[in-house]
Image (cartoon, rainbow, N blue to C red):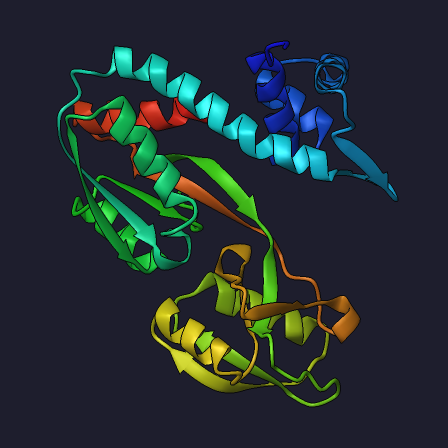
Length: 283
């Protein structure tokens, strides 16, 4: 049985994450033709097609989705093994802030990677709302924060870009032409702004059906069928569904989750942990 080439898998993941062969090439410092050759070699190695063309876009096949899950695990183990040899002296307390909506999706792999690579490091996690966590980072109450918010005074890099969807209960009945009942979180909120701006640009009437102070309230109201909310794909559960352009609703902008630290941090532990996570993303 042949052995999968980790560099080919790294190129494959970059193409998926950056949605483009050209962008993947920029990320990997390779030419677009080199990225294409890597994908062709990988398909020859696994013996199945990984992408299929739909219109002008290329999408993962079922085999591609299956390989993507394994590829992420394989590269994570590879990078963790190398990092653990380099970072086995890293010890102390690292305080990480995370918003609720990615606390069980983006955050766990990061924590797992840190724990495997630096087992002597103690992690303290603060889960809250993104704007308040960013304030905590500036004040030094946490060492790093995952957030959709941008701040030129901080140092950071992108972890993931996720689509923002109109999400409702699986049993919710959508009636076109009537004011859209919105489930909103109170200010400040990027999702609140995205929802209202998109509806007003499209001249779609809306009303506030429910106001919450956090994601727990948003999820409860959504599951109860009180209306529709705009959130990233990470919130979607098996008891929910997505409304879209076929339902008369406008498309929403994507959000990008970044990992931020203070640019002027003098704490070597924070800097080394930050680089550990950054290097695990191939950046």
